Amino acid sequence: MSKPQAYSVKAYSAVSAKAPLAASSIPRRETTASDVKVDILYCGVCHSDLHFARNEWNFTQYPAVPGHEIIGRVATMGSDVKKFKVGDLVGVGCLVESCSTCPDCRAGLEQFCPEMAMTYGSTDKHLNLPTYGVYAQSIVVRDEFVLRIPANLNPAAAAPLLCAGITTYSPLRRWKVGPGQTVGIVGLGGLGHMGVKFAHALGAHVVLFTTSPGKTADAQRLGANEVVVSKDEQQMAAQAGRFDFILDTVSAPHDLNTYLNLLKRDGNMVLVGAPEKPLAVASFSLIMRRRSLSGSLIGGLPETQEMLDFCSEHNITSDIEMIRMDQVNEAYERMLKSDVKYRFVIDMTSL
Ligand code: NAP
Ligand code: ZN
Image (tube, rainbow, N blue to C red; front, side):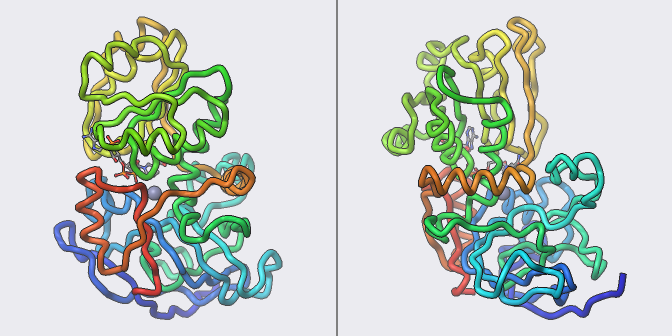
């Protein structure tokens, strides 16, 4: 593979786990024949960005540029790219590369490909440099990893669909959530509020578990049939054994067993939240009613496009609070206090 040239783009990065994010510049490869260069308009702020910037998952290399939920416009593209034209409104999520030939890729589950590259925290094999996230002016990515954004979706509010959207849509579809089921969503943040919207749109009876009583009215507006304040032991006791499925989106330490005990026989709880430290599971929470505990990682490209089309059909986007790039550190602190309604999105013209 001949090595493409690099060009420099403005970005926001952290130089260490303790440092705030600040203006910087990073290299991107020039477009190869199969690449699309996207000028970034809007970028969602995922809690994973915070885990990554602060090295909470122990794999961060610095400088670290977070960001994996963008909407932008096609600026240029390589000679082999036929799918797009200059000016198209597109999205890029957490994935930027995979081998295209392994069983996972052939199944459209590129997130599990052994050679998969993430938008940040992987290696750009063309430049042999780290991949840098999309708190940046532009990104260059192979055309297969660029998603079409339906015209009826508000572009800023669609940005979070590229991670928060697909990460909640995928497990709800995989475990066939639908009418007649009682479904719990734990945590009303970026992922959780999308989970509520999708589970409602799929026809389930939706119960939102929150540590923030002040979010009750919002949860109902977003599609929750019931809201349970998880700190209230009486309210929690009343939920025992009634759930077919629970989606746990919590980013911090919490007791999984409290939620496992709410599942029916053969019920399943899926973790998408990825707290820094391991969580303890009591065997009896699972064995007494043959319950399962599973995990789920974003979603593959075909399912991401399916999710975007589902959103177009059902008029679903994220509820967002727009911020400037220089407000991102403050946004992280608010995210840690569960004070997000319900996804921060950076207006990238402010970079
Ligand atoms: P977020 O917007 O910060 O939302 C997390 C929510 O969890 C909070 O709003 C809060 O909701 C609840 N929460 C926070 N601390 C809690 C605690 N100590 N006990 C109980 N509940 C608590 O975060 P996000 O962007 O949705 O991300 C959530 C998690 O998913 C993160 O760990 C992220 O890294 C992970 N993630 C995983 C994938 C994947 O592919 N699996 C993809 C993206 C993100 P309430 O106020 O309602 O309690
Ligand atoms: Zn994310």
